[in-house]
Amino acid sequence: MKKIYRFVKAKIKLFKIFDWIMIGCGLVGVIVFVVLFFRKSTYINATISVGEDAAVLYGTQYDLSIYTGPKYWLAEAFHKGQVEKDGLGRIRAEVLNVYTYDKTPTNKAVYLNVKLNAVYSRSTNTYSYNGIPVLVGSTIKLNLDNVFAQGLVTEVEGFPNYIPPKTITIETQLREESPVYLGTTGTKNYLADAINVGDVVKDNNGIDMIKVIGKRVVPAETVVTTSDGRIVRGSDPSKKDLYLTLEIATQEKDGKYFFLKNIPVLIDRPIPINTTTVSIFPIVTKFIKY
Image 1 (cartoon, one colour):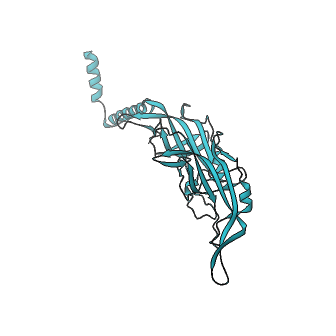
Image 2 (image 1 turned 90 degrees about the horizontal axis):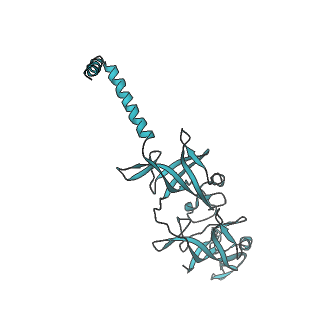
Image 3 (image 1 turned 45 degrees about the vertical axis):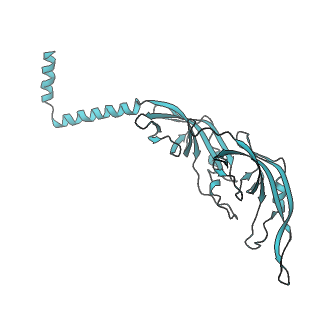
């Protein structure tokens, strides 16, 4: 042992500054390798709302930015079983389920339920994926079989607590306020004919989201001025007032109702109804059952 000790000590004395630098770099490399490849990781489930972009809805006075979302062609690219792998071929992320709903004729709401191989940090008591904390409200990026997804984390391992869907009944009115004829708020006859009792709007999993259970069509009223200067209301033969009674799947949070997780169901606010033949945004006028 003494001979070995003297031999090592003699060799160390021969080391130059460059040798010490190389030894230091080697130790740092080993530490980095251990940290990157031997960190404690585990799979966690999360729900991601795929990124939204700006959309313009024509001829409306309402701010419908909450109805924007991925384009139709991008939303259709996601499917159950997509994965992201690391350089060694190991699965780092996997799509467990896809939830989509038409917000507009060209945009969808897209939620991905994913399983992530996340790294746990004891110091912060959080998980991270690609160096980004997996927290509600954080944004993460995924490369899923040549499809890029950037989304907002909305749920992580049951947080927030699961809120069961609740079906409520509301009355809505389809309005088309004209900048020329301000006193007329009816809609076109062919739009009134395009929606019927029994129509159902489903999500991609076949779950009923909106069902039309009542319909009332009356001649639209308009404000006219008579020859003697009086202002009276009359019927507009080219317009109809369309009232729809809807059963709508919502989530209740703090006494308020939300459609598609983040669209508030409120009086005088629009609800997106997109069927295979028509896209309309009727205004909520009354809560009937909730």
